[in-house]
Length: 307
Ligand SMILES: [Zn+2]
Image 1 (cartoon, rainbow, N blue to C red):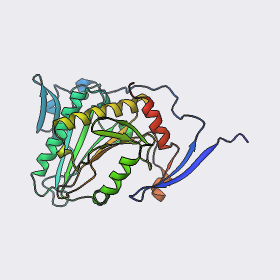
Image 2 (cartoon, rainbow, N blue to C red; image 1 turned 120 degrees about the horizontal axis):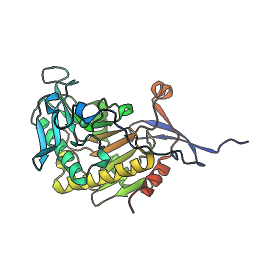
Image 3 (cartoon, rainbow, N blue to C red; image 1 turned 45 degrees about the horizontal axis):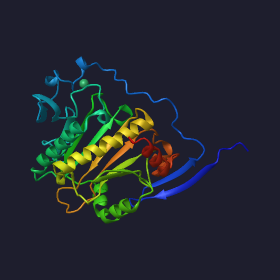
Image 4 (cartoon, rainbow, N blue to C red; image 1 turned 135 degrees about the vertical axis):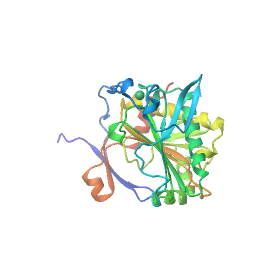
C-alpha cells in the first residue's frame, strides 16, 4: 500500500553492457527549477580568455573571424600522451571552442559550432600525418562533475599510438549498430537531412543521446563542408533540447571516429548528461542502475525541440 508503481527491466547491448531499470511511470523526475550555469572564475583570470593567450602553451592552430580567433588549439599543459614517450606516444591538445567566457557549447551559433567541428577535423588530419599515431579520441568534459578542471568551454584531443580494445570492438560492430540505429524509431527524437539523434536502448545515463549519420560514415575526416554544417546544426538542436529539459547539467561529449588503419567504423557522437553518478554497484558489477526509461527521455527531449 502506498508504494509507487515501478516498472523493471534488464537490458544488454552488443558490447555486453548491462543496465537494470527501475522506473516510476507516475512522475517525471526533473520538475525542479532549471538554473543556468554560473561561472565563478572571472575572464581576467581565465587561462582561455582572449588577452590571456600567453598563459597557455604556444598555439598550434586557430580559426579567425574578422581578425579575432573564434576557435583556438594548443598542447595540453598537463599531457597524458607525449611525442617524447615510447609507451604513451602521442599528442594531447586543447581546443577552446569560443572566445566568450560565459557561453557553453549549446549556446554557440551553428556557424561557430561548424568552425569548432572543422577544427577538430583539422587536428585529426594533422595527427594522421604521423604514421605512429593509430587513433584519435576527441571528447569534451562540461562541468566539474564531468571532469572539467577549467570553466571556459573547451574540448580535448588525444592522438595515441595504439587503438583501445573498446574502440576495436566498436569497429567490429559497425553493421549491427548501424542497422539497429536505423530501424529504431521508438527512441529517435530528432533528425535533419543528414543526421539523427536518439536515446540508446541501453542508456548508461538518463537522457543519454547519440547522434549518427543517415548515410554511413567512418570518421569525422569524411565530412565535407555541407556535412559539417549539418552536424553542427543537429548538435545545436540536441544540446539545446537537453539544456531545456535538464537545465545546466555537466555532460561528456564523445566523438567516435575510425582508427587510422580501420577501413570501416560506425562514426557517431555520444552525449552523456551526468545527472546520475556511478557508485558502488556499478563499480562492483559493471552493471548500471538507472531510473530513467530511454523511451521516456526521448519523448521529453522531443517535446523540447523548437516547434
Ligand atoms: Zn575564459
